[in-house]
Image (cartoon, rainbow, N blue to C red; front, side, top):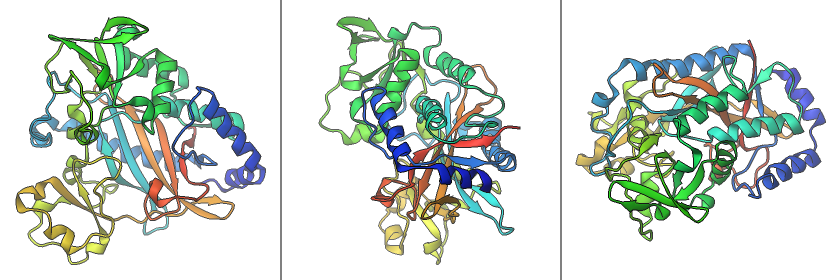
Amino acid sequence: MIESIRKKYNEIFTEEKYQAFLNDINTAFGHEITFRVAESPVFFDKAFKKKITKAGEEIVDFLVNHDLNEITKHAIPKGFEVPNQTKHAHFLAIDFAICKDQQGELNPQLIEFQGFPSLFAFQNYIGDKYREHFYVPDGFSQFFDGVQSENYLKIFGDILLNGHAPEHVILLEIEPYTQSTAIDFIVTETYFGVKPVCITEVIKEGRKLYYINNGVKTEIKRIYNRVIFDELVRRQDLTYQFHLTDDVDVEWAGHPNWFFRISKYLMPFIKSEFVPECRFLSDFDEIPKDLENYVFKPLFSFSGTGIKFHVTQQDIDEVPAEERHLYILQRKVQYEPLLQAPDGKVKVEIRLLYLWPENAKRPQLMVNLSRLSRGEMIGVKYNKDKTWVGGNVCFFERD
């Protein structure tokens, strides 16, 4: 953290500026954001940028140097495999808790990662809005390796469209405008012309897919997938013609199989100073006695559902033996309260966002997402009625 920048930011911060900032982002697209946007971004120097970049690249090295299809051949639950898988994921998000090591230095520790799109459009937008409304010094950027907004959007747009006219590409979701991430869908449409479409609105005729675009039946040639299988399975109230597992004539920007393949499932295989101990429950001959030092996670859950932070032996015992390969025990990390708010320090988690064009050898780190927390975990339910918490972005000192 850069003390001089934080001191100046806090000195000139006002609640009035924050409310003007919120009003701007809530009215710009006629949509009020349903998640909390924090009062401040986070500022890091070049040294920490180098460290967290290294942490991310070690994960990427594993992905590009191993046969992921072989390693993850059991990662996709039966009945959920989608045809026409792309050769790799187009999107990669890696979450790091910011901790301190034994030397007292800030140290990123992997929480989880996913081969699935996150707020890739919104993070470009919100970085500009922080800079517009608050103090952000020159020489700092939310992007990496010389990336600027213009070429970031060019690469992102190429992945989304793949040469198709925007009307033939859709952002597929479940009731997209009711999702907490709806603002990202709206910004995506603003940037690229790709409309959010509910899976219930997709028309299937043989191997072809269509949707009604401004009253016109329009063929879908490419899908930017934001549907989470976990949510789709829970929504028994929905009726739809197109199932993700159907073999149809459509391209994918973010193929659904990679949601399962690049996920918590891979964490036990990765060895790094930035990855806490993590093992499948089925791999333990003897369950650790110090379960208070572990987090219990189901492999196939989303947004923290099913995670037990205070795991007990009873939690373990309730998992049938034949299902223990579907859970992991991950050693807890200690988030370091490090961002100085007016009334105390706040914990930070950083999500590195990568784009992976179809013909690229490896994904490229582009932008980031950060979240602030005062609770024991990152997330809305741990930060209710608190200030200086929520989603934001990190500005890193440029090289």
